[in-house]
Length: 499
Ligand SMILES: [Ca+2]
Ligand SMILES: [Ca+2]
Image 1 (tube, rainbow, N blue to C red):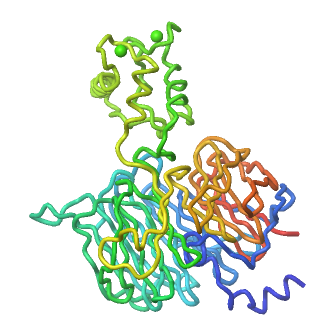
Image 2 (image 1 turned 180 degrees about the vertical axis):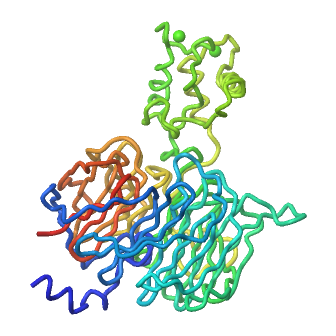
Image 3 (image 1 turned 30 degrees about the vertical axis):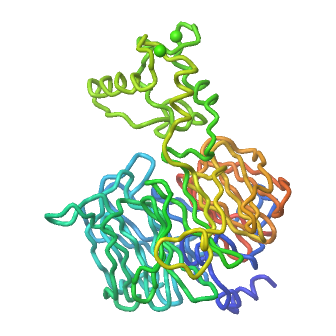
């Protein structure tokens, strides 16, 4: 019966998982019924994939995903039913851009529509293929420069493909950045409009179309601010400030509002920081167990702590250091000086704590109402929350709650009317969270980097439904069709299907 309904293309008429994080980037596919209790027996198939952090996108019976292997960049099509590889196309050769250890050269997700699939690689630019793998057009773009490398995915609006390429590099003979947002014809790859963002530096957010009572707006979060544009012309309409310089989340919407989030620089979730975990993590350097960290106890892993919930030596644990040993030691000595207020060559808990809690900026989840022009003020900012804001995962708006998951496995639910916390709950999976939450059928799916998948019931009370340990680590936002949950792990795409 299931098979029959599939072949009649009923699902094609519905929204499909057509871009990063599915319909409109929401992470929600209400009509889908993936398993809510996932066990190994639900594994329909697994298919090996090259490296990459792009999410799968789905149309009809095909899944499209990108990957990289050494200097080669791939677009791959799989059969949704059995995971069989249908085709693989290599992107025209281009010098690879520099990316952070935590990123890859294949991180932006593809965009798919009824005819074609569109892929963006930071090192090359855009390529469009038909569903059968025949190349339709290609459009090389100058690679943008950033600390981590490209991650923003293309989105669709009417006949357009919209792409943000924010950039640390300057225009020629200028101090203005090359950052811009562009619209291309999906049919031909021709540039339709572009709008410069000259005062903004690199960012990692995928934009979103916000559809509200006044029409549609393109919402772009990046480098400290969120900007609303007319998606047909690129004309800037409004902006709001206060966000971190490093923005990652996609805007989400519901109840007529759009919700924008960024953690404090360094990934801090709460305005009021608890310094205790930072000190506890620092004590790993306390070799002589006197309860202080001495300058003479600095080892190769010593740096300024940012994410004490990660293991020492993890690239996200603290501020990155040069790999050259001499330069590294110099930098470590400098960092030691930041908190050693009385210059006795010892860090005490008090010294570190006061330095940790005095950071500039704050984490923000902001609710914006339609109709604003220019810089938004109180009239169009409904509320702002400064707690529980994740660093990498985007918020999820689902059934009248906003959900946010952060490192360590804390899930917060927020009332979208008031901006007040409904709850904070502990998931089973600890460590880092990179994947954004998704939802279907009254359940929320949350994936930790270690591959722990937690299923939570939607609602204003925390209720764990199920927990499942994936066979490999996974940092990529999962995808859904009407009966299947697809998870990209470090080496495979895993399909867990309702039976
Ligand atoms: Ca000591
Ligand atoms: Ca001291």
